[in-house]
Image: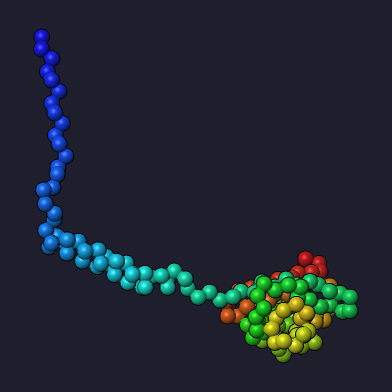
Length: 158
């Protein structure tokens, strides 16, 4: 019995000469065109990834009953102009008073006071409220430019 010898492995392919100049040019131009195309895609689509976002002010109010009833602005996440806000006061789902955008033009029931006279909603400002008989009172404040409620305070027999 005879054992067959293993075959010699085939040698790896060895190029005898360099690639032709046309192939080198084609690869170079293809690489350049690909890079230009990626840059153009970045110019077109990257700005859409980062749209301009408006600031939203989340307002924390505290009920203060030491001298009448008022809601003090305790903290604000973003200090913004008063023109961006409006407010509504209701008792038992009946609207008692509202302040238009800018929080001006208050009545005896609901009035805004810019405590530090800056024209911005920030700490030190407050809402004076004249409440009648007991009930469930609800105060809501909206930011007009983003159409969101930014403050909600309830008190009384809710």
